[in-house]
Image (cartoon, rainbow, N blue to C red; front, side, top):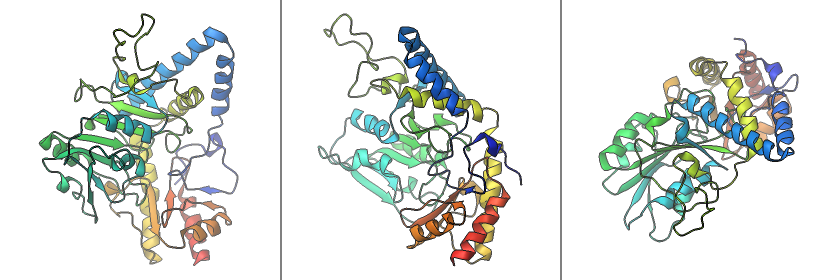
Length: 367
């Protein structure tokens, strides 16, 4: 299998098998132009600020196309934890309320609720590997289900439709983190009430900005509990009355978004728009399936479900020696990812079957 993306489009060192998209993807060479354009606009006074605002609107439109939602439902935050915190702070919590999560859920989804004290929010935590384990926890006191579409720790992909039905049954919110999915997995974000994604992984962008989605059909009256100059209407007439919030999802964006990151995101979205997400998904899952088969032949267990319908673009191996294994593989030119007691191999469009073979050879050498 050849790469779907041209590896020459990326800052990829010759001879390196870059299989850590779930951590960081390599930079597109085209991003150099995006950053230079930002530098020019930033230096160009008011016309330059208008150029920055145009880039924001272009990024909103590009994300709306990628996630199949309206551009008015797309805003920006600095990271996923900030976006989830804005949602958490906006809710009128009552004693005894709970949220439902998986035991391996990412901290950005859990942290905004776990530290709340007045009142404390109960965490109902699903263990095991059954597909319906999170939905089975939902009860009449559940206010929110928090889920990553694909797990950062195991590579498991969650079926969001049953979670949507479980949330609707009790009037709870469904909040989804698409960070480990957006950029290769076809996404219909309207399944969620709120959704977020970092941009520096499969989205091919950089840190500094994350996407925030507000489902205005499901939650038409939603308001954040705090605001800034950008999320409020004009304050030129003073603060009595307080200016209204922006009518669209830019009410998530309290101040300036990271403009340089927005410019880069536009370049990334332009690049990804050349490919159908179904084709990108098919490509990366041909590689995950091939690697899972090779691991089975080597009798190396993986925590990633074998069924492609239940995993994303990563294959994970639990090991107390994860750091040493990843370091040893890097010395052989295979860049994987460690942390949290697992080795993670993650594929994108620039990978090919030769990278699977490089992984297998490196693992043999490590063993």
